[in-house]
Image (cartoon, rainbow, N blue to C red; front, side, top):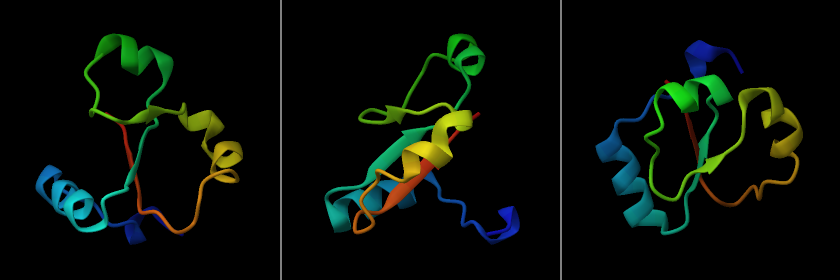
Length: 71
């Protein structure tokens, strides 16, 4: 999928998605350096460095909405 085809979501849209589906997987895909520079994180998000996302994605359930974010 091209980057242009990936939908961008506002915080409000993510809250609505969580309210509608209940279980939404949030992945913080920032590098370690980016996390140290900006340590704030979305509550409940899992940290998976971008370099590890492809391998990690194989273990993700396909029936739960997934939201990734970085700075």
